Length: 236
Image 1: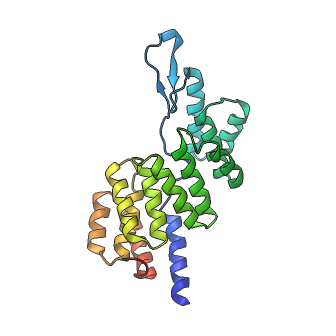
Image 2: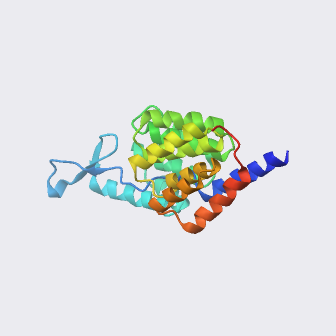
Image 3: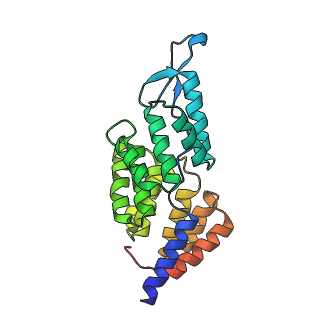
């Protein structure tokens, strides 16, 4: 019993330190369309749609609010203007999830689950499931996200982290290594892999990995303590 309680506390602390990403990855989802004149500048959205550059800039402004941790402001702007674009629908789901209105967010994500932003929709639903404590459902949904966009390092990291929490170390290792090779996930995948290696007693290898990817030394020390507290339970 004491061992299970300690493991639960360690996992709870890991959630606070590392793991799944926040609201959304910082990226512009649209690009300027080719063949337009300077006076009629248009942009091309993530689903191939074309619309005025002014609309694209407004949507990008709302995305920046989400990335800056201002989901209520982003939601207010989305309510003010009905853009009618898939990416604005996704941002509405992300904003609702960020303020804890998860059921509403899931309903929004479900409208995107068969379109060009299916990977983002499944990732959002997976994060909601994880927040509710249903990690098995979160893994199933995150695998759907991976299937929809296998080259997304953020999705690979999130899936690897969830697998790590469930004790599926071999599967977690593969996802986290893939995330690192795909790049653009900052220190999250590296930190998660450091935890995994420390749980397996491979401290020297963990420290080399942390040094290679610039994981903060203070964080490494905290991760070492958590891994020691958790012991070597789970799949090897």
